[in-house]
Amino acid sequence: MNLLIRNIQLLSNHKSFLLGVGNTRSDLWLLLHFKHLEIKDYKICYQRNNGIHQRKSTVYPKRWLKKRFNTTAELLDYLYSKFYDIHYLQIEFTNGWAIKERPQISYNIYTSSTEERDTLINKLLFIAGLEPIDIPNLKLNISYYFKATGQPYCYDDDPSPDEFWSEQRLSDWKKLAAKSFSTREENLLPGDHPVNDIHFVSTYINDGQAPF
Image: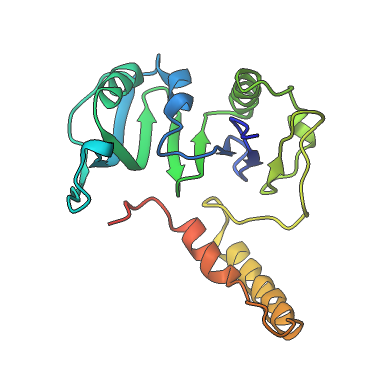
């Protein structure tokens, strides 16, 4: 079973969070809950896709959307009328909020206060059919996953870096991650393949660019 919301992670500025969904290219339902907000600025990378009516040899270029919209509702009405694949999406709102797509599986959502963050999280969980959670008890930068029954759970207590970390904290984290990666490599069994955590983290932090 695919849940509308798969996981959540509180970011270290205490006002923002990561929300994991199935596929950000198609799961634009989330934006409906921002439809009343006025748009200050946005970046959207799209690619035309005519589906079964498109020749296999036809590949349309990826482009930046340049049309102007006053509200999220206007933007969604426009996107729903087009045969577009969305490769990157970032929206800033006039109330200080923002939403930024992470590579095809999640969104970073930015609010203006801890109270606004907590209210929005439980509103989205309710809409997704999940129970409210005790947000103050969640640890920062830890991914918590959902199931149909019970409270969210995590696989480990290893924090993931975010854009609000200081350079020193990020540098210290990378050193520890590199040491851990080296230890796991030494313990690999014949035929096992190592996972490059450092490369993953670099991609994780330095997102925000369209995949051209």
